[in-house]
Length: 135
Image 1 (cartoon, helix red, strand yellow):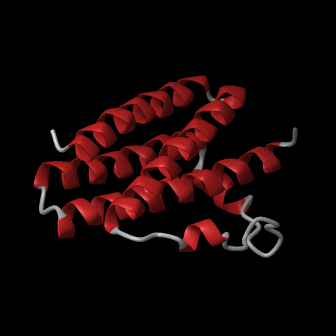
Image 2 (cartoon, rainbow, N blue to C red; image 1 turned 90 degrees about the horizontal axis):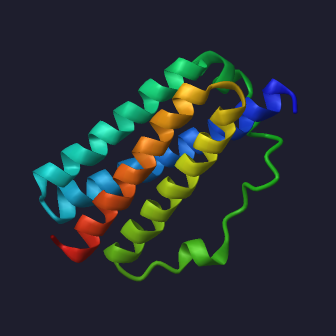
Image 3 (cartoon, rainbow, N blue to C red; image 1 turned 60 degrees about the vertical axis):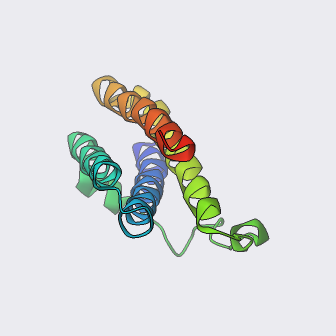
């Protein structure tokens, strides 16, 4: 696999994960009014960026091909949100899946960064449970 293709996958998933984290953060901030949860998502977002910097943000952005992305269309299931909990859950899933992709791709060129992503993924599992169960 060419590095350009690998970085394209990683760039898309970095963006997806950060977007999902921001949505979860804002729900915790503006809907739940939970400072601790809000801070946890913000910290994760910043740590995700810090891990990406270790890979090389410039290479990730250079690999971006928005115009050629064959998966840009919105699915009907994405429009079926009924309540704020649906939005939170969908985005927490998006974050976990994206971080897993980042972790797996990083194993090909950046083993230490893969460990950073793995740690973030497990933190997301724990935070998601705390918020969904209200504990």
